[in-house]
Length: 200
Image 1 (tube, rainbow, N blue to C red):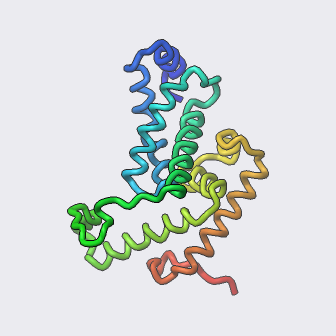
Image 2 (tube, rainbow, N blue to C red):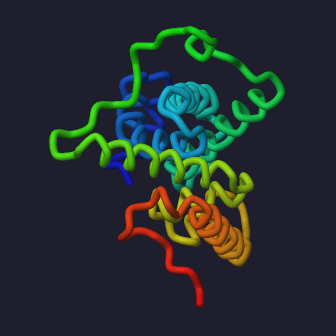
C-alpha cells in the first residue's frame, strides 16, 4: 500500500489534484499493464488508462475502502470492456489503415543484439500471444492477465472480480488451456525452447 494512501485519498476527495496525482503515479503502470493486455495495443491502452483515472477521480466518493489498487483495476477493466463493446458495434477504420495510406510509425526497431530475423520472430511471437489472449472469453482473459501477467493471488483476483475463489481457479484453468491450444496451433512461431511439448 502507498504510504499515507488513506490521507492522499481524503485529500483527493477534497479536490486536491496533487494528492490524486500521487495516487496516479503509484498505480499508472499497473492500470496500463491490464489495459494493454485487454486492449491489445499501446494507444488504446494509454487512452483507457487516462479514462480510468478520469473516471476514478469523478467517482472517488464511491470508493468504500479496501484495496484502492483493486478498485482502480476494476474501473480499468470496465473501461476497456466498454470500449471493446463499442468497437464491436461500430468498428473504426483509421486513416492509416486505408488502402494506399503511408504511415511512418512501423514496428519498433530491434535492439543492436537482435538480427532482423530474431526481431521479426519476437514481433510475431508477441502478436501471437496477444491474439491468443484476445481469443479468450472476457472473464477468462481477465483472470489470466491478473494472475499470469500481473502476479495477483487467487484471493486478490476473487476480490477484484467479485467472484468465488473456485470460480477464479476454474476460469484460470480454462484460460490456460485455451492459451495452450491456441499457441499449439501457431507452434512454428515459437522459438524452439518455448515450443509446447505435445502430450504423448
